[in-house]
Image 1 (tube, one colour):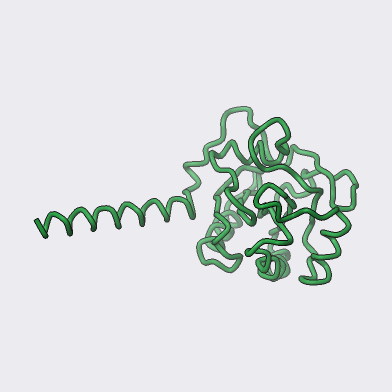
Image 2 (spheres, rainbow, N blue to C red; image 1 turned 90 degrees about the vertical axis):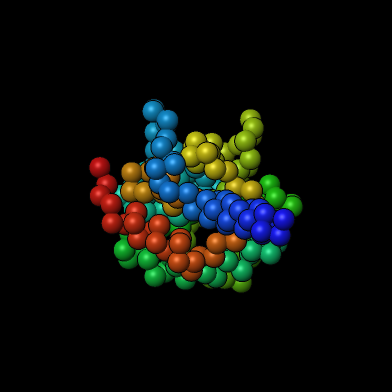
Length: 197
């Protein structure tokens, strides 16, 4: 009986570990996008300053897309994102921040307030865009509708998508994976090593 109980517990622990790893980083092959879904770089957005922007400007780069918030327990990740951006921008990596109030109402501010907060507290220089809805539904941002075709949508603030040079989702990481996390760095390096078509 004791051996059976230990076997059951070991099986549950192993299964939980596999599930946790799969939610941290799903391999690129699990992100086969539907035919005709296009590219992230086909989309047009609005900057935090309210100006139109074309994501085609980032084609040929590796892009890290992050849904950000100013009043979240993960908000200090802004510092790590900025550090990562300054380090990897010369290699062809860009970070795109999309403020969202979807989770816990943790991004209630105006665009001006968000911009001031990011500059004052974290010296953010990576591109920031107008507040968006990440959750599925009629108000969902086209950016997150596209990213959601990977089968993964943010469950909280500071979820991260690695997008390859052609605008396809390469990997997804939940909030708890920090900007300096080795698994995130590995996914970015892998995407950098691939050729743009």
